[in-house]
Length: 331
Image 1 (cartoon, one colour):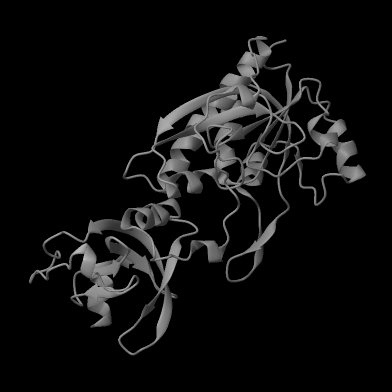
Image 2 (cartoon, rainbow, N blue to C red):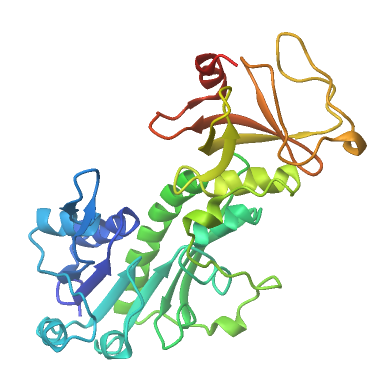
């Protein structure tokens, strides 16, 4: 069988899933149908908005389904009518067995981690938050338990100190798209030897990647500065770490944090026109205490030093550099 004869059904929703679909379509593969989430209200007007995958599929005139329930018989009948040889899932949702077992060659998933590490909905964020220095992408065949199927292919990439969730997302999106195309080519060539995840070397303990909610994004200042820095960059630019700040008029407001830098307590001076001495680790103020000159720097106390806030955003305002915000607030 060649690529034009292989009938592929593709499932995905966010921007991360568009690149893989684009590579398949532009590579000449026969994508007979696309499945994505139903349109959802978005923006101030709460107008229904199509997912990025839907927008791409429509631009390419690909057949499209948007089921509310994946066990609905109307949906299942429509899916069967596509007579897929292979299904590919990238950032979609958990599939029931009646769906993933339907194609004769099975269903494989692209996951943004080196499985079995970081099974779950937020592997990119969690890897950075936990201070990992390496991650990657994995393609694997679906089975009953989520993210546990036999591995087909893995591609590794370092996590740089300068990476945040946004930059790593974009890099893994490209690596993952290539991994998807390579996996399909290997399946066509009968050149795959899937490996059980239990047989793969993995550092202990295994870490999971559960979905992140707003309250999970609140900064806990009772941690080392480096851990808080990793927390901020692991959530930047979205959904964004946040904390509460007290403004000059006494109002307490939530502030999203996008860029930070850990500063040890032993550092001799603050980066200001008139350097102020840092206390030693033994004489640090309580965690969460703010130090600022009111015009150039905002330092918040952690358990072993300070976190230098480099950019932030307050409600109803644009994201801005800390110095710009301080001067506008007139501390």
